[in-house]
Length: 83
Image 1: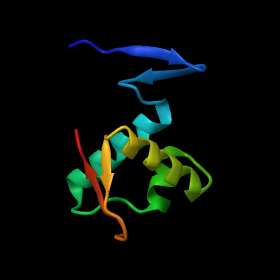
Image 2: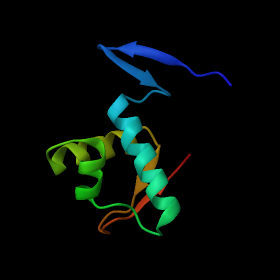
Image 3: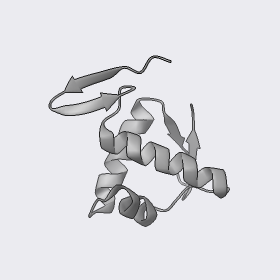
Protein backbone atom coordinates (compact mmCIF):
# COMPACT_ATOMS: atom_id res chain seq x y z
CA UNK A 1 0.00 0.00 0.00
CA UNK A 2 1.36 3.40 -0.98
CA UNK A 3 0.82 6.28 1.41
CA UNK A 4 1.48 9.71 0.00
CA UNK A 5 2.58 12.42 2.41
CA UNK A 6 3.10 15.97 1.23
CA UNK A 7 4.30 18.97 3.18
CA UNK A 8 2.14 22.02 2.48
CA UNK A 9 2.50 25.31 4.35
CA UNK A 10 4.33 23.52 7.15
CA UNK A 11 1.58 20.98 7.82
CA UNK A 12 1.94 17.30 7.02
CA UNK A 13 -0.78 16.11 4.71
CA UNK A 14 -1.94 12.55 4.22
CA UNK A 15 -4.35 11.78 1.40
CA UNK A 16 -4.68 15.51 0.73
CA UNK A 17 -5.91 16.32 4.25
CA UNK A 18 -4.33 18.27 7.07
CA UNK A 19 -3.71 16.51 10.37
CA UNK A 20 -6.83 18.03 11.97
CA UNK A 21 -8.99 17.18 8.95
CA UNK A 22 -7.79 13.59 8.99
CA UNK A 23 -8.24 13.35 12.77
CA UNK A 24 -11.82 14.64 12.52
CA UNK A 25 -12.63 12.40 9.55
CA UNK A 26 -11.33 9.32 11.37
CA UNK A 27 -13.25 10.28 14.52
CA UNK A 28 -16.51 10.69 12.58
CA UNK A 29 -15.97 7.39 10.79
CA UNK A 30 -15.28 5.45 14.00
CA UNK A 31 -18.19 7.15 15.81
CA UNK A 32 -20.63 6.28 13.03
CA UNK A 33 -19.55 2.63 13.08
CA UNK A 34 -20.93 2.47 16.63
CA UNK A 35 -23.98 4.73 16.32
CA UNK A 36 -26.41 5.42 13.46
CA UNK A 37 -25.92 9.20 13.62
CA UNK A 38 -22.99 11.57 13.32
CA UNK A 39 -21.35 13.04 16.43
CA UNK A 40 -22.42 16.47 17.64
CA UNK A 41 -20.22 19.51 17.07
CA UNK A 42 -19.39 19.49 20.79
CA UNK A 43 -18.27 15.85 20.63
CA UNK A 44 -16.17 16.56 17.54
CA UNK A 45 -14.69 19.67 19.18
CA UNK A 46 -13.50 17.65 22.17
CA UNK A 47 -12.18 14.78 20.00
CA UNK A 48 -10.08 17.07 17.82
CA UNK A 49 -9.02 19.39 20.65
CA UNK A 50 -10.52 22.61 19.33
CA UNK A 51 -12.01 25.35 21.49
CA UNK A 52 -14.82 26.50 19.21
CA UNK A 53 -17.57 24.88 17.20
CA UNK A 54 -16.85 27.29 14.34
CA UNK A 55 -13.50 25.52 13.86
CA UNK A 56 -15.35 22.21 13.49
CA UNK A 57 -17.70 23.83 10.97
CA UNK A 58 -14.72 25.01 8.94
CA UNK A 59 -13.08 21.58 8.92
CA UNK A 60 -16.37 19.89 7.98
CA UNK A 61 -16.74 22.35 5.09
CA UNK A 62 -13.22 21.51 3.92
CA UNK A 63 -13.95 17.78 4.10
CA UNK A 64 -17.16 18.33 2.17
CA UNK A 65 -15.36 20.44 -0.48
CA UNK A 66 -12.87 17.59 -0.93
CA UNK A 67 -15.79 15.10 -1.25
CA UNK A 68 -14.74 13.05 1.80
CA UNK A 69 -18.12 13.66 3.44
CA UNK A 70 -21.58 14.87 2.49
CA UNK A 71 -23.73 16.91 4.86
CA UNK A 72 -27.49 17.00 4.42
CA UNK A 73 -28.65 20.61 4.54
CA UNK A 74 -31.13 21.48 7.26
CA UNK A 75 -30.66 18.24 9.20
CA UNK A 76 -28.69 18.00 12.42
CA UNK A 77 -26.07 15.29 12.86
CA UNK A 78 -26.42 14.17 9.26
CA UNK A 79 -23.01 13.41 7.82
CA UNK A 80 -22.39 10.74 5.21
CA UNK A 81 -18.91 9.26 4.75
CA UNK A 82 -18.09 9.08 1.03
CA UNK A 83 -14.94 6.96 1.13
